[in-house]
Image 1 (tube, helix red, strand yellow):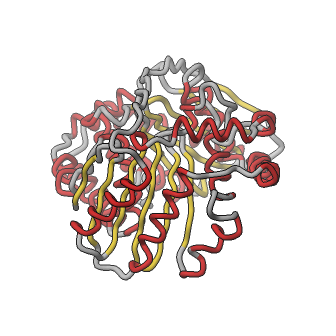
Image 2: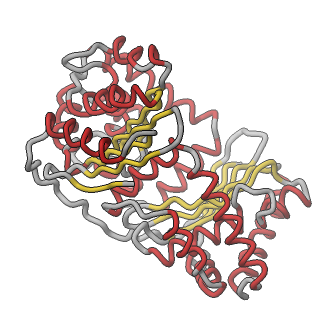
Amino acid sequence: MISGTLPCGLRYAVKRSSSAVGYCSLSTRCGTRDEEGFHNGIAHFTEHTLFKGTSRKSASTINGYLDRLGGELNAFTTKEEIVLHATVLKEDVWKAAALLFELATDPTFPEDEIETEKGVVIDEINSYKDSPAEDAYDRFEQLLFEGHPLSSLILGTVSSVKKIGREELLRFNREKFLPGNMAFSIVADMDEKKMEKKVMQIAGKLFSSAGPQVPQRTLMKPAAPSFDKSIGRKSHQVTCIVGSTAPSLYEEEERLATVLLCNILGGPASNSILNSVLREKNGWVYNVECNYTQYADSGIVAICLGCEKDSLELCLKVIEHELGRLMKAPLSPARLKAAKKQILGQLAISSDNGETQCLSMGKSLLSYGQVSPDSRTREKVEAITAEQVMEAARRVFAEGKVSRFIYH
């Protein structure tokens, strides 16, 4: 893999694969938390409307451009970035890359397309009413980060989306989509030096040698007062979230210990603690998971479950008991070794996917300015001690810190 930063400020990473498929992504540091001075939801709405036309391509041309090649074009918005990405045959990867840069740097935001897309996004917002788990998580995060930029809703509200106009979209694009805010990554079966040279050529045509100065994002820890909130809904199932703030992207040792803790507690495998007890042993839940979302200045650990109303108290008692065990005593050497092997296996399987690799490279470039080799991650995971996992549990689930949100 080769990575670097161009004089214009664009970060890049290229990696050779052995697949007939090529992947590329263009990540921009301008998520929901960066909407100050704009209507809430504009980052996500910008992501949608970047596809609605450039000075050289209409919306219909863009929609069919990669389809005709058998490829895929997609995008997503998070609290901290907008990501455009494409999957194509390796011989078409530069066509895809050129399209991503064109969408990000030359959108026209046609008025008629804006109005049409408002209806699409408003439908997406309203669809959350039929998805208690997603709505509950958004509300939990809003309450946990109240007063902090991370509390903003990614989709915005119906009211805020209706107020977004073309001039505001153009200003958001002009102020945020700068080369110093961007990272380009590519995974394809090509010579890495040639890929690097091609990236330089593309960027050289678009950006001046010295890109405009990019304001640094102001980082601050959220106050995060604990809360216990319930909302009545006429639903068959209870949705419950229990959690608190957690280490940020930049607290490396604490972050990795927390990743391991969450995988042990409620990771995707059926042998995780809460899956074993709540689902496999007692059948009280259909699904339970412990998610850890990492941001630049904080993080959030959330245990999410859905169950019958009569089972909620039993589930909460089990969660409290299992958290108590993790906080009181370190894992045995055998259990810690098994937990590390499991998460390293999950990471290896995930990184074997070209798209996952490409997106992860872009995220690392934006967050750290570099992409660490898999071997370094393995070394750091292997170095985690049982005491660090125990301390992670005590830090995240300390008495008086844990919050709870229930839809019932």
